Image (cartoon, rainbow, N blue to C red; front, side, top):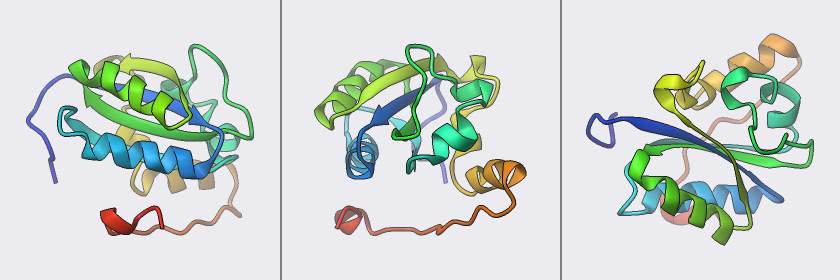
Length: 141
C-alpha cells in the first residue's frame, strides 16, 4: 500500500547499539509528520552483519557494521534526510549510508518485508525468523 505520493526516494542506513533503539528510530521515522517515508525495516544483530553487509546496496559508506550493530533501513523523501539523521542520533544511532534509491544497486524495499528472509536463507538454509505486524502504539512494549 503506498503511503506517500510518488517522488524521488533516498535510502538511509543507520546503526544502533540496541534493538530497542533501532526499533524506536524506525517507529519515530514512520510517525514523523514532516518526513514522507516509503518504508522502514529493522535488523537485529548480527543479521545485517552476517547476511546483508556484503550486499552492495546497503554497504556502509562511512563505516562498516559490526556483528553487534542493530541496523535500520529507511526509505524517505530527499528533504527528509536531515530529520532522519536527527532521529537516528536522538535514538542513540549513527547514519552510516545515504544513497538515492534510483542509484542503489537494490532499493531498500528489497531488504524489507519478507525479502530479508530470502537473502538470509540463500546464504544459510538454517536461518529462521518470526515475521509479525505490531500495533504501532504498542510495538515497543
